[in-house]
Image (cartoon, rainbow, N blue to C red):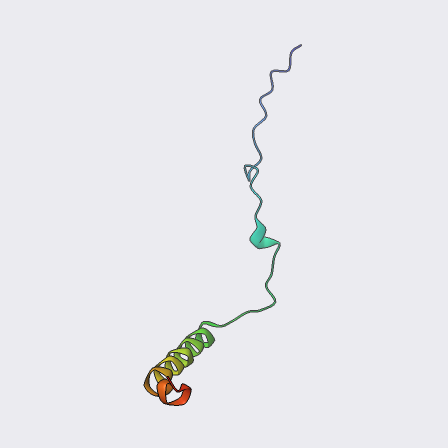
Length: 57
């Protein structure tokens, strides 16, 4: 008797889900990211306003 069975691929289709295996040690809340961006914007504005006097350009 010949092998007439058809083997179907597994449910994942051969794909590996890496996000299940890796957990970052650094986690940031959205509020912290917004605060860091605001601080960077303020620093850039201060440097544009006073940077020439402080750095001597």
